[in-house]
Image (cartoon, rainbow, N blue to C red; front, side, top):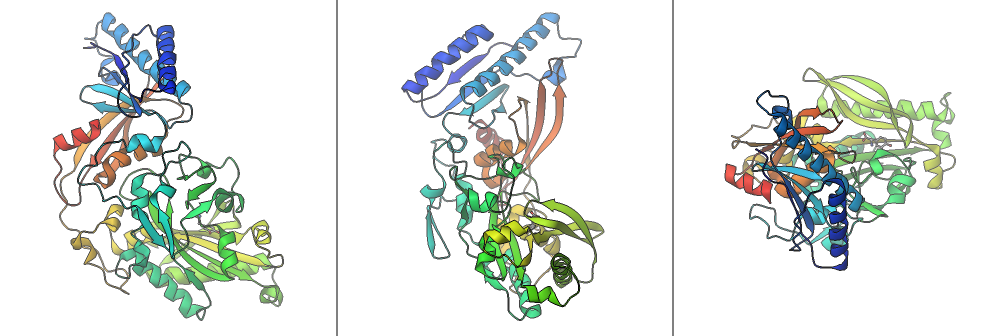
Length: 491
Ligand code: DAH
């Protein structure tokens, strides 16, 4: 049952291509005595095809002869060898993705960049969202070519750019817009309109603003290309948090509702784009002067009172608890949890802004608090929305259920189209991350992918680890056919 093993290398005829071909020949000759078939052809990715290897199922079966076992082992090492070859040749690319296609394993490796491989030069399937090429945010026009580029330092997919223009937070009848307005009105009512509000800050910030200025350590995981969308090595699309220095500069009391994006897993509650409300309050020495407590304790007590009030405004009279936590930009740092629908639910993260950050914004005699709250997660529980992708859906059965100013109306699910499941297995190496796998799946299937779930793993005697994933595809608009998803996976 193991009949063939071949390697196809696609690429434009160029000096670089020929060099890579030669290196591959050498590598394979040396390590595996395979004769790879190299076809200089079409665009920029490389495909490695190996026979079906359901190792975990077959390897320990008695009906496998020892010759077959040897063959299997040979192919296992061939695949590992190819993985090694690829990581040697393309050290900067994202991890290899082995797709289960028909009976074969295919490893696709971007030739130039990760994003360019994902958006191969093929016509887009009809169901993909239209490609937007210009969006306007806060009067600033952002061209797609400025954000999504075919450059090894850029990992922003088209889909992220298209979402940017949808501006859900500015739609008064959309759950995200309604929740934003409810938070704004809590602050307006309790702080006599003192808080300035921003919902159209530029989604592109510098690495310095987003990480360095807010003391995120140089080796922090959030800085990695597996976590953050980089436009180039110096700029990124706002992940995790809005730079507090930017907010502090905007005023002593500010609320900003921004979009965030980060590479993430795929399931009903995770989506690479979401919205976050950030709040900052800066105190002057005479605010805490007569209180009898130090500035940090004063600000922390004010922060907790303010956010407990906000949670009651949104969720009613719920039980709450504070949990100590760590953020690089605040000290002390806390999370607020509420007891809602019989579960403890994390509502937000917050803390007292590090003095060094305030100093960076020229505030030397002050103390400040800050918080950040994810709108999608709260909107899902408040409205009972079962799948985060629905927020991006234009389906009237979804959009017509919400009206401006009405918080927490229970969402009535409409009938779902059936899912289509596909399993895939592959060996992983050290550079594999689930986020990047999800990014490839999402780059290929867009919003059709509902969930990517690890359903098994296996380590063989040589210490190689294989993963088996189940991908659930489901359209919000129609029934998917098996053939269509097979084609999609093979593309
Ligand atoms: N980034 C935090 C989170 O993801 C929330 C947060 C905490 C935002 C402290 C802030 C802050 O602006 O100062 O939960």
